[in-house]
Amino acid sequence: MNEIKVSIIVPIYNSEKYLEKCLESLVNQTLSNIEIILVDDCSTDNSKQIYNRYLERYENIVLIKNSVNKGPSESRNLAINISRGKYIGFVDSDDWVDIDMYKTLYNYAISKSCDMVICKMIEVYPNNIEKKIDTKGIEILEDKKDIISKFMKFEILAYSCNKLFKSELFRQNNIVFPNLRFGEDQYTTFITLYKSNKVGFLDEYLYFYNKRENSSTTDKFSLVKLDILKSINMIREFMVEEEIYLSFKYLYQFRYMFVLFGNIIDACIKELTFKEAQNVYIKIIDDFSYNMNDYNLNYQISNKNKIRILIFKKSFYVYYLIYRTIFKNKI
Image (tube, rainbow, N blue to C red):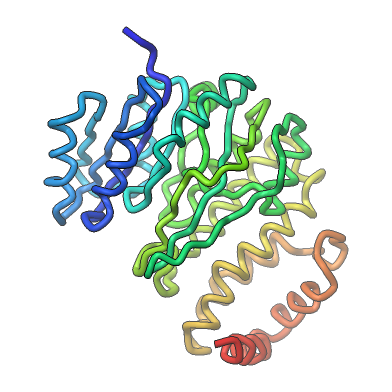
């Protein structure tokens, strides 16, 4: 029996509007010897009828049906456990990929002996508006310091979907996706990067990320988004265990600051009343103080952002008024 080259894992939950386009892009991949693992996470729409048509036609599709809704993280973990591919890829069921994506990534990974290969991606907004998401022009990274630095500075995106991972990364290091509803990729991507000996980058746009309305990344602010702080704190705990935290503390704080403000605080101020936003502030301020206790000494953070943090710490009311005005003027 021929070796499975790539296992493509697709968690499915109520994505009937987009699932056919996703599956079409996968069953038509130009790479041979792949398996497609679908995980139905208790969908209540017509997703089942759609993927059943593909199950009947394609022998390389495997189906897992969750008995209860487990979320994307646990669905991916279940699929990893049964996957047979030398490499693993992840696709969200409302996204799609270039038909040459996995052939391109796999051939590059094999030719360069990479543990992970990363391609560029295109965000697709309603009305088919596209935005190219660029990463820095790198080809190969082998130095752990460079890998950590580029991740912390957002030069390597935290998404799992635009990457091909050697399956041994997960199995030999017991890496799993944490049971979070938002920001789970951040932790897993960092750990797999850290455990990789060689990471390759392709200057090709192969993944199409559907920024649809009412998705977990585009809908209005909810407390679920606080999970991203759990994710980055898990990274800190890992770095402490590996005895590298002190060496990269300022880079970690740099990332923490942008994760906190970009994903939580700015969203609160744009969408919530002061009282609602203040309730969120109360929930996160201890975590902020724990992670940013000496931010004023951090040379990675600009003076402008240090002033921003100072106002945030001293008076959330003043901070809220300032940035509410800024955001309103940008509309």
